[in-house]
Amino acid sequence: MVKRILGVLSYVGMALVFGALIVRGRFPEYDQYAIYAAWTGLGLVLLYTLGQWREIVAYFHERNARYGAVAGAGVVIVLGILIAVNYLSNRRNTRWDLTANKQYSLSEQSVKLLQGLTAPVNVYVFDQQTNFDRFRPRLQSYAYNSKQFQVEYIDAEKYPLRAQQYKIDTLGTVVMEYMGRTERATSDSEQDLTNALIKLLNPVARKIYFLAGHGEKDPASSERTGYSSISDIIKRDNYQFDKLILAQQDLPADASVIAIAGPRTDLLPGEGDKLKAYLAKGGHLFVMLDPPDAEPVPMPVLEGLLKEWSITAGNDIVVDVSGVGQLLGTDASVPVAAKYSSHPITNGFGVLTAYPLARSITAVPGATGGRVPQTIIETGARSWAESNVKELRSTGKVEMDEKGGDKPGPVSIGVAVSAPVEEPPAPESTDKKPAEGESAPKPESRLVVIGDSDFATNSALGIQGNRDIFMNSVNWLAQQESLIAIRPRDAADRRITLTAFASTVMFWFSIVGIPAMVLGTGVFTWWRRR
Image (cartoon, rainbow, N blue to C red; front, top):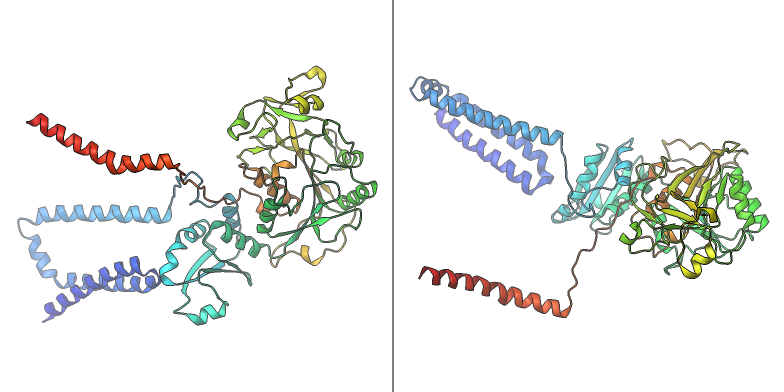
C-alpha cells in the first residue's frame, strides 16, 4: 500500500516539474509559482526514491552494479557540468551585438546613467500579456547594466486598478518611478526609454538661449542650414531653448547656456559688456564662429571677448587633404577630427566629427586669472590653416605655404576654458535648484569655442559624432556631466531599393533560372549514368 502511494506521488512530482518548466517558458508572470511547484515535485521524487531503498541496496549486490555505478557517475558528472555552466552563465552573463549599428546594445549614455543610479528605479510596463515580449529584450538590457533597475509587467486588462492608479490611457505605456518622481515612455525604443530616464534623474528643465540679431543659425529652421534637428535633440536631454536678442533685453536669469551660432556681423559693444558680466558671474557661453569671407567682416567685440579668455580665432580656413573626408562624401574644405584631447567633453570620444568650412581656434599660452584654455578638437597631421582666404574661396585651389602665413596641422578648431567665479552669483532661480538627494554644482564660469557652426546644421548632423560633440559641449557648459556620452542612435535603414529592370531580373532568375539549373543538373547526371 505504501509503495503504491509513493508510486503515485512520484508521478505527481514529475508532472509538477514538467509543468513548472512549461509555465516558466510560456507564462513568465507566474514564474514564482512555477519555482514552488518545481521544488515540490523534486521533493516528491526524492521521497519516492528514498522509499525504494531496499531495491537500491539489492541492486548494488548484483554483478551489474559496478557497470551501473559507472553509468550513474557519468550521468552525475554530466549534470554537474551542466549546472556549473548554467551557474556561470547566470553570474557572468556576456552578450555580443553583431549588428552594424549596434541596435541591440545600449548606448554609452544609457549605460552611464544606469551605472550612476543611487536608488531603485521601478519600471512598470502596462500592456496586454501577449505584447510583453516586445519590451523584454530592451528592458532586460537596462536591468543587466544596473541592479537598481527593476521591471514589472502588468496586464492592464486583468489589473485595471493598477492601470487606473497610474492613469494609463494607452496600452504599451512604460512608467518609471524614482525617488517619488514619475516619467513615462510610449515605446520600447532606447531613445524614448533613456529620455524618460534623463527627465527622471534631472526633473528640472534647463534653458538654452540662442543669440539672434547678427545672422546666427535659427534653432527653429528646418532648412539645410537650420538648427531644428539639434533643437529636437536638446529637448530629449531635458533642455528648453529660446532666442535671445541681447540688444533689446537683459540676460535672462534662467539662462543655463547662451549659444552664439555663426554670427555674420559683430556684437554691439553693449552686448559684449553684458556677456562679459554674465561670464564673470558664473555664466556659460558656447561660441561657434565661422571662418571669414573673401571680404572679411571685422568682429572686434566678439574676438576681444575671446581674447580676454585667452582664445584666439584665426583669420583662416582649415584645409584637410588626408582623404578621410572622402569617406563622408566631402572634399578638402571639410576638415575631419578623429583624435581628441583629454577633457570631460571628449573623454572616451572615439567617433569622427566633420566641420564644413572651419577656422582655427587657438588657446593662448600663459593665461592668467585661472582661465586656462584647453584644446578639445584637432584636425589631422595632413591639414593646415590656410591664410589666403580670398584665393581659396574664389578658386578652391591652394597649397601649403608656411612662409605665407599658413599654419601646419594638426590645427586646433575647438577650445574649452573654465574659471572660478569672479563675482558672487545671484540667488539661483527655481529652475537651477538641484533635485532631491542631489548636491548643487559649484558655480564656475565656462566657455567653449568651436571654429564652425555648420557642423550642427540639419545637413551635417548625420555625420557620426557631430550631434554628440555639440550636446557634450552643452552638457559640460550646463554642468550636467552625467549626460556627457555617446547617445542612442536609430537603427540603420538597410532596405534595398531595386529598379524595375533589377526586379524583373530577380523575378526570372528566382522563378525560372534556379529551377532550370536544378533540372539541368539532374538531367546531366541521369545522362552520364546512362
